Length: 314
Ligand SMILES: O=C(O)CCC(=O)C(=O)O
Ligand SMILES: [Fe+2]
Image 1 (cartoon, rainbow, N blue to C red):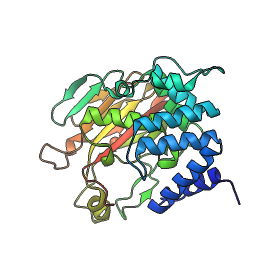
Image 2: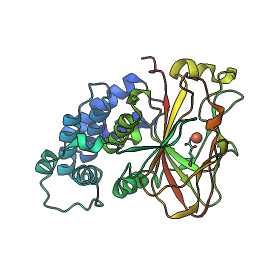
Image 3: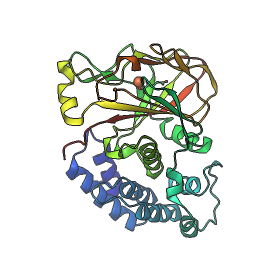
Image 4: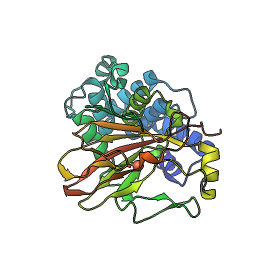
């Protein structure tokens, strides 16, 4: 029999864990945390930040992170250091008092998105300079580096996820086992910027493009005329908005382009771009056609958040 932490991770990283599995994983993490397992405490912090099988609480999330950091979790230490000061790369030192560091954190300040600038009104496209700091971006890239898989798209034949030459980059879909308090803070910052609540968010994705890889011109909305999308549309609603954070800028090419409106967006590290995929009346807007163009040199990293218009049924 494996230890409670390993059992919990197996439950979470399985194919689409249900509510019971998530609750059981939460109990197993709490047991392992009480036994001194630092990684389990870090996972408990994520459960609190997400409000997984319990009410959401930043206070408890940070308390659990401080415990995890004291127990030796490097991931928890990095997150606390970034919440404390997001302008420097975390570099934990041995004798840090994690509980007092935690006490000085103003988590609300970490959810302020900065100023929106309009790039287009029809369709609505906005940018925010330095939405995330460079150390935050490097932390996000670090989460994905060793866990990338080839990206998929919805098949317009059967609505299932499928590989397609239209999107030949790699990515990490951040299901619950892959998330942490910092990714949840970033999602809340996006929520403040878009005025759309986090429960409408799909699992976040970390995208990676090597030289020549691209996401060909596409729409992020799902075509309601296509039968194959009926199930996902009725359960989760339309994908009304897309929010992208550019995590690095050491590449050439790699713009996000909108051919129908002549917009070619090239970001600096931490900049955000977001757009409504539907009109103000809620109809899918074909003018939102866009592409992730291939980097010509270097590699491109993006945090991508698709947002629906319906809360998933419990
Ligand atoms: O990587 C890009 O520039 C575009 C990504 C994109 O279109 C998406 O995530 O929906
Ligand atoms: Fe897209």
